[in-house]
Image (cartoon, rainbow, N blue to C red):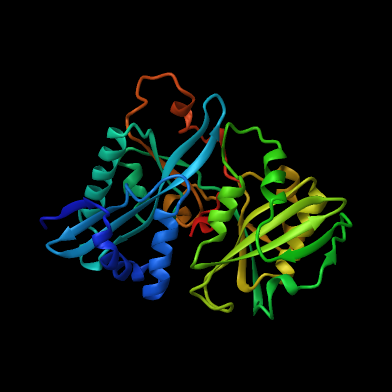
Length: 348
């Protein structure tokens, strides 16, 4: 068995991480460096203290990225929960104990600091092994997607697109270069029955939009003020006609007509071969109307091997809350979560 050395990230490891993560980030030295700073050092909720590295001698052979997310929890108020991301194990060390050893080290540190949960929204290939080792799954849940015969490509600046009027709502839908203050303001007013939801304030929108390896496409619906918005994401390391999907990471509206008009406008304008979106927290009427918008629904089959690429949350208790009465102790219940605005692509 290899004699691995598990460490915290320090600035001395920066160059090694930038080179190592090319397997995943594919941004080159400058892009990877900018992404490292954005995702971890510049995260508004948590610094890079929990980023975990594995070494064999002086060679970096594994990394667990951990960034901060902020959640509103009924009965508790806002709470920071760390998210696992950017997991990479060197090819020669996959299938062995390294991933588990990094996770064990990370959980021990979180427990010592009183952090109750670790979240992971990725389509983690190690998901089955994680579930057998104390992780809890919320999901998987359905996704909707539309595949075009010919990929759409961007022509000119996104915010130069001509405004359109929604055929259902009559709202004016226009493209904007970045998020506006009206977007988090609208999101905060929309009702939810769930007890846990991501904090979508201006700080969150601003940080997400600063992702140096992403392109975001914003649409706003207006009718005597902002009545809806849509944000789509596409990686900047792939071309418009490349294989990665364009993901609608948020679509919020005051009613079903505005929501449908926004999705329809996005399908007509955002680039890419495939456009996809989560549907877990859509109302029944919006799920019912998806096919009329040109999207098809993929539902979980109940078979782990077949559903492995569908979105899900897997979470691990650190043991801090064992035996305690706290709203945070109930987070392993699927019904408490509202995933709107959380799409994994929105954090990549």
